Every structure is written in C-alpha cells, then in structure tokens.
Image (cartoon, rainbow, N blue to C red; front, side):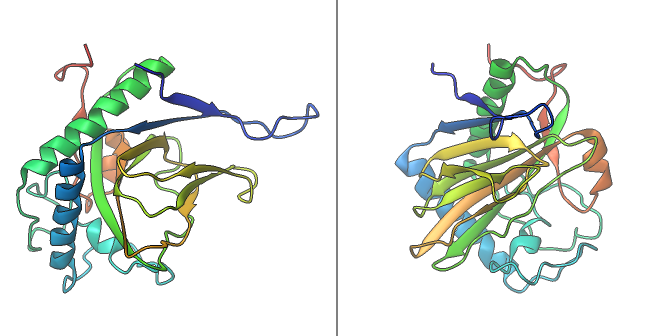
Length: 240
C-alpha cells in the first residue's frame, strides 16, 4: 500500500533566522459509492434534529460562520450519540445507524496508518465527530481546533465534495497555506492546532465529517462534548 503520510515544512528558509516548521499530515481516499450516499443521508437526517435545538454549551456561537448549525452539531457525536454529556442529556439523540460503526472503522484505520508511517507511538485517545452540510455559497471560516500543550489531531472525511479546497495555514503567515483538493471519499488528518478553512461551496451540497482526536486532558477540558474512546494500545488491536 502506498504511503499516504506527508510532511509540510512551508517555504524553504533562505537564512538561519527564517521561520521553519514541520507539520505531518495524511491524505487518503476510502469508501464505496453506497457508503458515501448512506453517510450523506444520515448526516442530513441528523441535521434535521438540530434545527430547533437549544445551545447548551458555554461556547459563544460564531455569528460569522455561514453554516448556522456548527455549534449544535458539537453537542452530539455522529459516531455514537448515546453517552452522557454535561448539560445536554435532555437533547434528542441521533438515531443509531450501522453507518456509525463503518465510519469509525474507516477513520481509525487511517489514523493507525498515519501513526505507523510517521513512527509515532500509539496512546489512549478519544474522538468527537460532527458534520458540516454546506449549501451553495457557504464555506468554513478559518479556525483551529484543540491547541496548546495537549494538541493532537484533527480529521475530515468527505462523503460529498464540491470542487473546493481545504487550506492548512502556516503558523507564521496565514496567507501561506497548503491547499488540499477535496474529493468524494477523501480523508485528511493534520495537527489540531493548525488554522484551516475552505473555499465557498460551488454546488448545491457539500458534506464533510469532521473529527477531533484528543488526549484525556483535552476531553476532560470539554465535558459538554460527547467523546468516545477511539484508540487504546492496551485494549484495542492495531493494524496487524
């Protein structure tokens, strides 16, 4: 199997004082047409639940975000919405669907490949997953996920793309960015502290499924977000 793991180092430093960085990332493609269609249908079904839902978290809603349900999605976990969460147990749950396990296994398989290809040791981590169902003219504002000393990984999977790009910005100059073309079935992993955003959606619908893969410290710092166990080298098998 080809190596999907890469490293972006930004512009080549021309002096000993020019900024340099090392950002590992991973790009792959996975999923049958049937799987992608069923995942899109499930995301749209779950979006209906959010339309009249209250916000229970203390996180301020980003009024500049053209997609109005981003914060509502984060009160749920697309992979498993049955667990306890602080302040949100009264919210309507996403229906159980076989697509959840299939999606979990796809993300975990590529996470494990990324770790293996980069030579990083596995550790106990958790995952929180949501969707962005963008319509024509909408986009994802530039932002980052978990930053700080316990930063880990962000992930996105595209069951339905829209001829747009994902931009991963340099930590020194956000105008300098790595552009990754979004394709149906595409999956990207990158460090969660990296600022990222997208172009405007050009067609009627673009569905992306985003995940935060986090350490126990990050999970405990966000109790309103319903994380589930994603990998544990002591109790869960690796690739082989």
